[in-house]
Image (cartoon, rainbow, N blue to C red):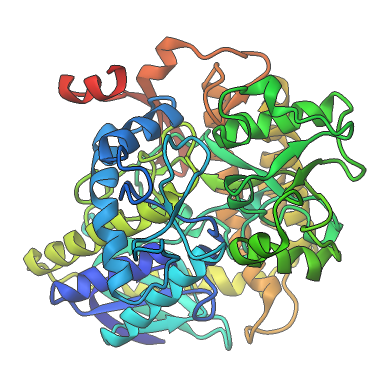
Length: 567
């Protein structure tokens, strides 16, 4: 079993992980990035529309204060105001820095970064490269990390965080190509593992978005907040079935795309006549859901998104990825025909509770950044805020993790018996006398969550999901994996199922607790937003292997920031 030693270990090679590793390296730490995907395959590439930062290049009235107000309003004021302030103040600096590192954003004729409108934003705020912004960001950060001589361990799946004397001391996992186990010893660990969309049947996430970071943190006792808030993006592909859920970027609506029902009606007039298609994602998703439910859906169970009124050259220039995506996958020319779209599980607002300034979790030595962290987005996230979030807080997590490692003089001895136990747990899937197929179990999990813990929820469905999840966890004990440890997708699926089942339970339990509708959490048995619930977070921690649920107050804003909201 290989052993590597670093000051800072970053788990995740998407935008947040790369930015954290670069920051830690610049602070003088020895750093490694662990990625379960091949290089360049992180889900960040699917964030296509742009990076939200109040540069004011097209609308001079835009500034961090307006961005601050928009973000809190979008999050239904459940956001951590300190995180929102840091996010909106730091975002312009991080975007300009990214451009200096080589990101080729689209520019105005006078050389400034071009910015486009997006849902929930008061001004044209999203810096972009066509509709391939996430890809450009990832490539830029990856080149910077390689130039910084950061170590990469790719296609390595981390299954356990190692904790010694109450502090995170490293991680244990295995390489997917041949199954050999590996231990990483580190003074600080940064989780930047992205989301958990694979828990739902219809989702926009990559196959690797199985919630690993959440599960790793939960297992070692980190506190979680707001786990009931799961964002369903309004526009995923509906047809053909093989790509159902694949993201159709909000940039289509930002560039003038119109949503229509089967009668050709522009239905957003009924739901948000002021912002129309550029309303917040929770409102647009629920509007589409209502149209479909009321029998106004498209042929294949969605609605229509139309950009064909724009010129062919404009569509191909500003939305090249969408043009190619629909031509290649659906044989549809979006310059001439409408797209069939519908809501798709997209982003997790809840997650690990961290200190806003340092990104440290409630576990000593464990930091986190990106989607795996809660607080910045409240009850629903505005489009484009995820990319600036991961730049801002990835940087902060890397700096403070490096500081922690430098100041921590402790040398933790790794418990060899514990490491052997972790390996035995992995091998047990091959030796199991059971007959449960991990792919069938995953399908049943996705179906359960899709039907009962989706866009619109109620107590009966949530309780049914809870019962079914208990059954699925019992079936997990009887999963059997065939073959050997060399690149075995069924084995990887079995490992991920343990993560996903635990997280599905946390999400369902939190959704049962919050007896109101707020942002991305909609209860048809509690359809209104309740003031009392706007004053508290649902907190979940792992106590002896079981979720322990409490609440914590939403910290009140200082008066000078309240004026930004009311004034």
